[in-house]
Image 1 (tube, rainbow, N blue to C red):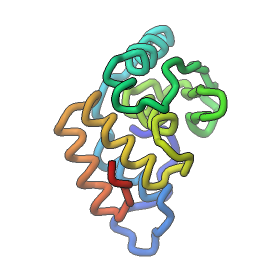
Image 2 (tube, one colour):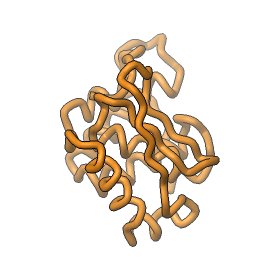
Image 3 (cartoon, rainbow, N blue to C red):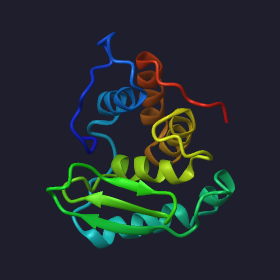
Length: 153
């Protein structure tokens, strides 16, 4: 399950906000995909393993090689990323690889465009590497069906 209230349905033609479309597409494609972590130390270790990898450095040379991982309370409404401080904050109860990778995609995107085309492209690349080809295909298909723009890489 993705880490915030779903406010859009990709079949709803009135939804045009890219952020809502991204979230709806992620929910559709990645709902039960990936790992669920039960210990905070495992969350932090997973982030460290992703951003310290040769793959991360080669794929996103402008992205931080060290990321601070902060824990948010369960009452927080969502997880988040801060490009300026190279940090992600993961909400208690949302300790899944898709949520973590979503936040890392904000740091990996070459431009700070919230959930815009550069974010979507970065998340697709990260999903393929860390969630597998089937999850990547499902996410790419859901993005296309929803009209989510992904910048060419």
